[in-house]
Amino acid sequence: MTGRHDVALVLLCAGTTALLLAALALVVLPGPYLRLHALSPAAALGAPLVALALALDTGPGRAAAKLLVIGLLLAAGGTVTTMAVARTTVHAEREATR
View: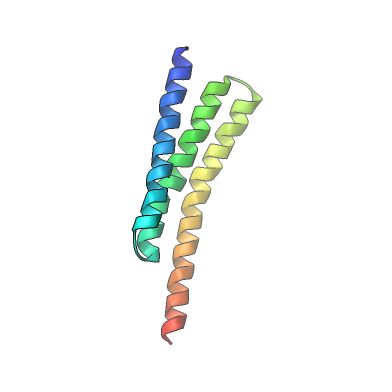
């Protein structure tokens, strides 16, 4: 095992841990806002760490560049999606109370 592989393994374990903890929080936490709060780290941290680990393990090249772009899109898109779902939830709750 090389040093690059070891670093990739650590990043993969960290990303997987963040994703598993977010999944556990979805099951345990009540209410939509707490669940959204639990999903934010998974979207902004867990999935990009997994993509970074895969890019690092792949080595230099086009595949690694594609994985890094995917990781950046997941980090940015996850945050935007969380905000959109939160706004939709607020709007739906306001409509339900009318």
